[in-house]
Image 1 (cartoon, helix red, strand yellow):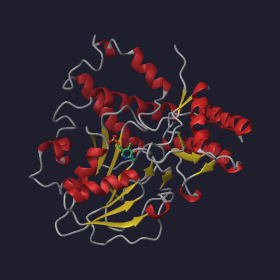
Image 2 (image 1 turned 90 degrees about the vertical axis):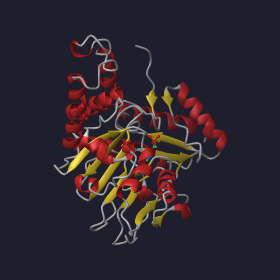
Image 3 (image 1 turned 45 degrees about the vertical axis):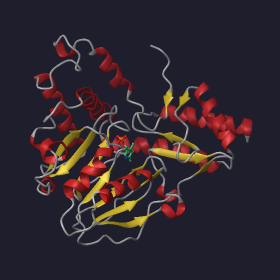
Image 4 (image 1 turned 120 degrees about the vertical axis):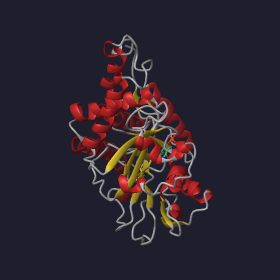
Length: 361
Ligand SMILES: *Cc1c(COP(=O)(O)O)cnc(C)c1O
C-alpha cells in the first residue's frame, strides 16, 4: 500500500480505512455476483439489500421512530436548498431561517428565488459569522425553521438546537451528521451531503418525517418531490449505487467498530479539545470562532500573516498532513476533523503546529 496522509480535507473528506479496504476487497466480485457493486442492477437483490441496510442503520444510529423515512437524493446538499421551500412551505405562512454562514445564505437565497415569505429571524453576519446566535424568536405561524447545524466554512456549530415549539425544525447537517447523538423528534427534515462525514460525493441523505410528506404539492416536477423518493425507496430512477453502498459501509463501521454515536461524540470531543487547547495555549495561532460556538468538526484558525499561513499549509503537507487550507472565501487555515480523522492525526497535527511555531513564531 502507498503512503496515506493524515487527511484534514473539508469535503470530499477522509473515509475510514477499514471501509476503503472492504471496498477494495470486494470490488471485483461483490458477494459472489462476479461483478462489482457498480456493475450490478439497482433492481437486484444485491443492491436492494445494500440500500435497505443503509436505511436501517441510519434509523438505528439516530434512533429514529417509525414516523421517519430515510431517502437518498442526488444533487448533493445544494438541491435540498431549493427542494425544501418547494415541498414544505405552506400557503400564507412565512418560512423562518437562521443565517450562520455561507451555506445558510445559499439556502435563504433559494427560498427567496421561489418568492417565499422568508424571514431571517437571526444572523451572525455582523461578526463575520463567528458565532451561533442566541435569544431569537421563532414565528409561531412559520411553516418551518431552517438552520445549519455545523458551519463547515466558518467553523461554528450549534451545541444545542434552536427551540421552535410546534414549528418543525429543518436542518442542514451536511458536515456533522452522525458525529453525535441527538433527539430527532422536533425535526421535520434533516439533510446532509454525503461527502463530509458519511461517504463519497453524489448523494444527500434526507430524513423526513411523514407529516412533512403530506405537504408536498402535487404539481411539482416528479424528481423534485420528496414523495417520489419516499414511495419508491429512493429508486424511482437509478440512485447513486456506489455512494449508497459506501455510506452503508461507513454506517456499519460506526455501529460495529466505533460502537455508536455516543462513542463517536466522545472521540470527536477529545479530538477537538486537542487542537483547541493548542490554539488557546498559543499567541501565534488564533481561532476564528467564538469559544462557545466552536465546531467539533471544522477548526478554523489564523496565523500572524498570510505568508505564514501559506507556508504552514505547504510545510504541513510535506509532513503528511493534508487539506489544511481555509476555504477560498475566508482564507486562513482549517482542519476538518470528521469522524474518520483519528486521534493519531490530531496528535501529528498538534505536534506539527508546535514545531512550526518554534521555527517561525
Ligand atoms: C458542503 C456543504 C454543502 C454543499 O454540499 P453539496 O453536496 O456540494 O451540494 C451544504 N451545506 C453544508 C453545511 C456543507 O458543508
